[in-house]
Length: 266
Image 1 (cartoon, rainbow, N blue to C red):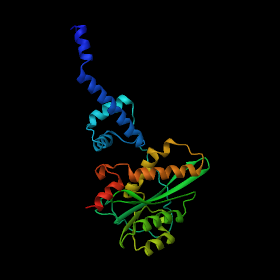
Image 2: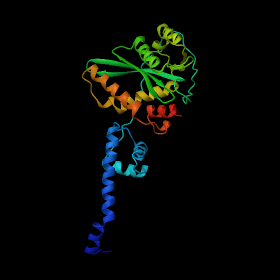
Image 3: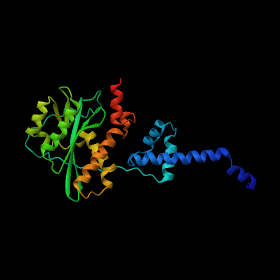
Image 4: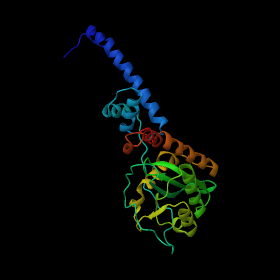
């Protein structure tokens, strides 16, 4: 089937076609901006949702096609490794949380854990406390050791920032730091109820472990840190991004801070 030269140029110069091409080019630039501003971790669902919030209608399949054309590839997490030492003789609290990860209000359930980051100066360790309601990191501490004081510092930050009422449930793995007398004393003073995962069961604390997977796969694994201070600043940068900007499907594609603000306004 042959097409006349005049018909071909009429199709090429069609104003509607040119407008659509321009719109798609502008949409590609916006997708790139959203993708890189969010540390290359947003897939089609999150980018489509972010575009809708900007007043730009673009479905998942269109976003997927344009991302493929742009060569945008999402960073995916690697398998999580256990950090805390559960081989000790301290008392173990029962698993009161029992994987009930959906919480109806802030400051009802906190989860906590430790991870590590390698630098050319040696390891640093990061302890966090997460509020399960919004998945917000409400307390954190960073040090070059993983003694109990690291975990206590993260807990104290969370407690003084949030000022929870007595009876809050605090869940961790069976690590020696969390089972220690020092840590339990702080829990008792704060009138917090303690819960621990079952032996060898990482799924009992999966929201916290999922955060650490995201921290590493979305930021730390792509950097080589010459100093401990550089690694610390990178972790703090990610915490600000995670709490204030990174959307969660379980939160209706809102960030933890946005989700809590909307709850407080009800």
